[in-house]
Image 1 (tube, rainbow, N blue to C red):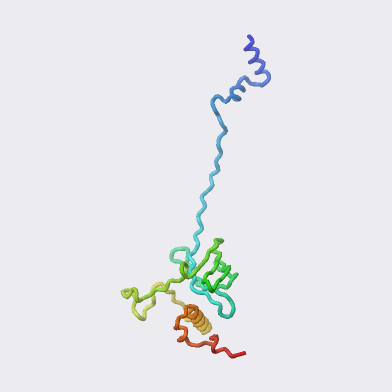
Image 2: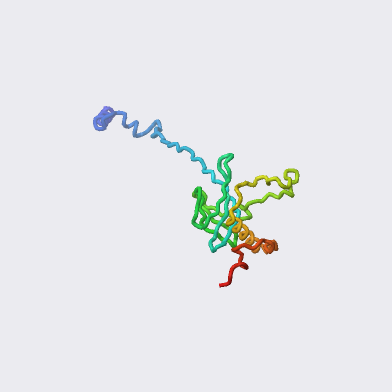
Length: 187
């Protein structure tokens, strides 16, 4: 009779005779685990950027870069950018002309370009005589409208500086332009 009175006293105070079962958790029940499914993020495809040149002509550091198209069949685009300038979510941060290194931000990702790892590879038709004949366009070279006289002068002087840095004697046979130091009047 004593046991019945204890159970009855507990039932009267707790409200349910089954609360002891819940407290003891004889069935080892636990709260359901809630998982939140996070959709996978697609990695951003960064366009390949090729360093095609660096110049300090006219006292301003400039990088010549080519940005490859991301989509198949999309043409590459070439740009001449100074420090702080950008195009198509590519910004030139720093140009070290002596080391031949350009620091860029490519769609939010920091990258360093140099001629050894990211430089333009020029095709050498002598290595593939079966696929090239003199007078025909080189494969992989984009053809565009003729250069303006100013672009021609800039290109000659850029080549001159490049050959001087390499101690290449070809620099001596490039034609002089109005920007060639030897043709500048003395002040």
